[in-house]
Image 1: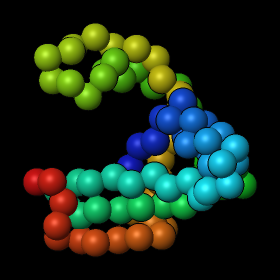
Image 2 (image 1 turned 180 degrees about the vertical axis):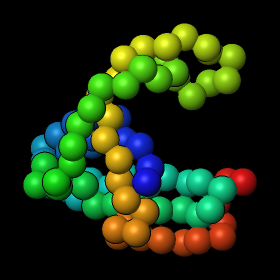
Image 3 (image 1 turned 45 degrees about the vertical axis):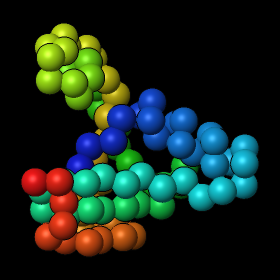
Image 4 (image 1 turned 120 degrees about the vertical axis):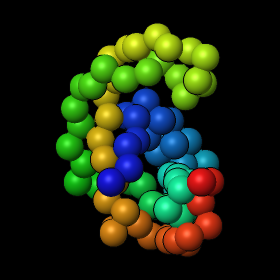
Amino acid sequence: MLLIEKAKFDVLVDNAERTGFEAWYINSTPMGIYGWKITREMDLTWERRVLPESSQFADTGKVVKTVSYLKVIKADFKKEGVGNG
């Protein structure tokens, strides 16, 4: 499963609704590249977690973020074996 932050989810879906485009969340991992078409109708369970403030390695601050998890097996797009690893 791959993490998605609620703040990012909301911005993507809001912009898609405003512009008439589809919202996609793409994630590159050492195992492959995965993409999900995201909508408000998705059955996501949100939880609050203490996580790094950013993905920058020099930034070690922690903050509480609202997150959910997307199942790799349910990705709308999969390209395995070509990720950033």
